[in-house]
Image 1 (cartoon, one colour):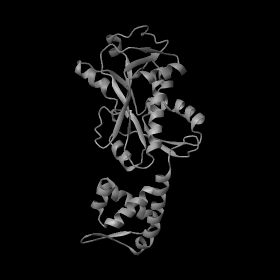
Image 2: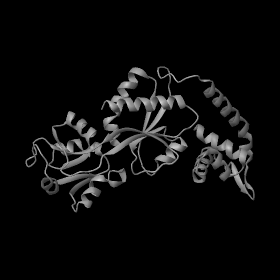
Image 3: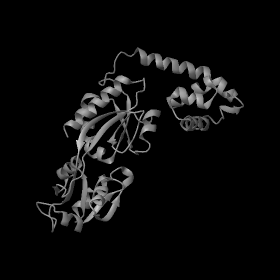
Image 4: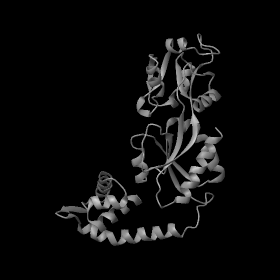
Length: 296
């Protein structure tokens, strides 16, 4: 059973009020209700029913509370007594939120590092949804998120810049019309692959609109990771961050071009919420991510 669900249960039981429980847990009221409903479904019981003052526990909830509370206390004591996080022996599971570009650029190096220095660590990767990241970090669904957060406001989240990134354009090496240099005329006359705007990659088309132009988009995809064979077997252009372009160049015969117009660079950051538990582990993980990205 998810430990966070037990914590939600205990705080609701102690406060007997959903909104008060949300305040103590530093969660939104809908989030507390959502987690409670998950537990209700799991245990096939209402657990708490509404009354004029808030909620009151069912008989099953009353019988579960002592055991749940004792278990949480023991777990908290074990965490508090742990003097330090040892990556060599830890079997912790890290839930990492990254974009598909992060998967392309980061995961191979990260897995290689973990195999050597933290062999029992397990990773669970979640795709980034910018509108949900803050909630996922606060609720503990994610431990760390690495992405371009330039367009995302997250007042509850700690954030540190990892590196500055810029956009470039790639095309297959034997492209019949583009060699050595990419002109604005060529960029606008060729057909393009675009990534759906919901992924946060909106800078290119915004900048072209400011300049009074638009590109011819033939293919729109949800992920950059599907593009390797598309570029190899077509004449389409792809505009993407430079680190991803270099990865593609290692595995496919492509050319990398500087864009024929100025577009702002962006910062990729590592983001986390200051949960009290596993603080040393999270600090270690963020440091490792920063070190790996610095070599890419």
